[in-house]
Amino acid sequence: MKAAVIESVGRAVVTEVPDPTPGPREVVVEVAACGLCGTDLHILQGEFAPKLPIVPGHEFAGEVVGVGSQVTEVAIGDRVAVDPSLYCHECRQCRGGHNNLCERWAAIGVTVPGGAAQYAVAPVANCVRLPEHVRTQDAALIEPLSCAVRGYDILQSRLGAHVLIYGSGTMGLMMLELAKRTGAASVDVVDLNPARLETARRLGVSGSAAGADELDRPSGWDVVIDATGNAAAIQDGLERVAKAGTFLQFGVADYATRVTIDPYRIYNQEITITGSMAVLRSYERAAELFANGVLDPDLFISDRLPLDSYPQALEQFTAGVGRKIVVVP
Image (cartoon, rainbow, N blue to C red; front, side, top):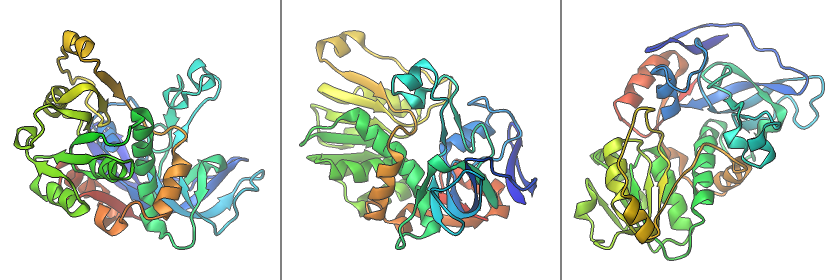
């Protein structure tokens, strides 16, 4: 079969690889679409320490075309979205309910072959059937949405909060949509990319600007969310949190990224700084929200490119052009 392969640091190609074979409790999915994510760039850059080469792609959906000998939950022909999370269920973190922090953490498309291919293997437990009205190609959005849902689980947002989001790429826009639906009094968005900021305005924001200084909230925001992973944005965001507010590190920063905190201010103003890592008991809820129209796929997905264009799609994503980019095998 044809697949994208990150062969080595900085090098991605499209080539032929062996067809996958399912284990007893696995299925083979014919991939309809696979989204690109910042994680893919980190793998390309040699971070997250996967063993290269690897077939990337952890945001995908498709049709079941093969089932293992012990699979009864789905059948050939079912359309499914796939949760890429792979947990050991044995370590201290898994036993404590923090599976996303598993000491043997793995994921389809990160540590084992993923969905940037014609076919992919997944545990049947990770597959969620799609309702008839959901287009299979659009369902690649469910995985990033499940990360956003996990982020809001961490925030435990109260009604009437004033929210500031750094970044209006796919994840920032998803956090915007969830903020609007969790009772925020206002949602402001900051981004240096005018095209992406315009998309945020189309979705409906209280304020939008290239910098927080342009927004009218001198007392700060109750919730500040970084969806960029950029050191300058993170540093600025930490200084915008209101008293008793919360800063959520949601964007994936490089390993070497460093910022400065003010311990006295954190103590004196009771500021919470927290993070959200991937997916935890949020994939099925995200699938239901998606089926109920929480996102407009035609607005979120800006580019649908053939699998053969995967290296070019990575270049476009790196350049910040467009919103969600998906490849279609």
